[in-house]
Amino acid sequence: MVGAPYRQPGEFTVSLPPLVEPAAQLSIDEIQRYSRHLIIPDVGMAGQKRLKNAKVLVVGAGGLGSPALLYLAAAGVGTLGIVDFDTVDESNLQRQIIHGVSDVGRPKAESAASSIREINPLVNVVVHNTALDVDNVKEIFSQYDLIVDGTDNFATRYMVNDAAVLLGKPYVWGSIYRFDGQASVFWEEHGPCYRCLYPEPPPPGMVPSCAEGGVLGVLCASIGSIQVNEAIKLITGIGEPLVGKLIVYDALEMEYRKIKVRKDPNCALCGENPTVTDLLEDYEDFCGAVSTEAQEATLDATITARELKEWQDAGKDVFLVDVREPAEYEIVSIPGATLIPKGEILSGEALSRFPQDRQIVLHCKSGVRSAEALAVIKSAGFKDAVHVQGGIVSWVNTVDPSLPSY
Image (tube, rainbow, N blue to C red; front, side):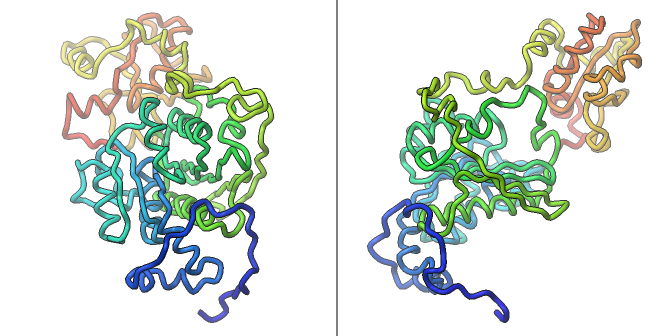
């Protein structure tokens, strides 16, 4: 390639020793397949043999897991584990490129395994078609040299971090939302852990999931490829991994920033006097899917989508409020619903729009945001207000399947 930079042998920084020992040899097929790696002095035969001998587990075969698995397989990682309990949905195909139309309804781990075998039949694929939890995470992690975290919720992220630290395993972390991405390497032996960066999870409802807020599909490839790059560096012992550093990527501005992350001496897990010495019993409870106020507000104030339909059919005077965002409302809405985004309710800006003489019913996509809004509504004096369990997803599934889901 004309004008491409050429790096002399030895002109690279090795900040950490290689994670695994090299395999005994490469076959003729492997030499031919990985030749473009082999002629890179930094990688060479020794580096490729280390990749062959490596065992890498990818947590989640979704947005981040898809490109990560594809490139790890193509790079020649000898053993690739996939842990995912979900099935392929049509809405996944916008970004989860390891799956195709024919895979809809199929377990993601199995679908991903088929794609990997098509890309590189030399890779040993281990499928963990199960939900990762406190009862199995240590046993699964112990089988691998390196963990690549492609999860999309805080409860699993903290569990992955804690298990990795307790087992002494390095792991590569990534996060995506709309146009923003982050990536880092956490390895307690050589630097900070995830809890050093984020000691506490954000307040419930503060950070929307990708299912609520969306994500630019190609952002998954941008961050997923960074994760694979870091995994290769750790395995082969080349370059300077993102240990103690956080990459922040803004796709709209096309801007990368690198932020130093220091090991926290007061970290609850890896600090000088740790208070977390084993896995927590309940990470969902630790992260709080919904606030205590929301949980209390929904007691005896929750109806099903079918009950809402019965109220409407019976002519009950219902003031149905959709607390989602305008872009979501444009995709699909329940007939008769008035759009009042959750933020306007939480700020108090929209409270004057709620009538005192009608039955108030709130809904969102799945029931989390409407529960948070319900707590505010009730504290404002609307004691009889209720919300719809399962939100518009439940409405589509149980009342009107002709409507689109997202």
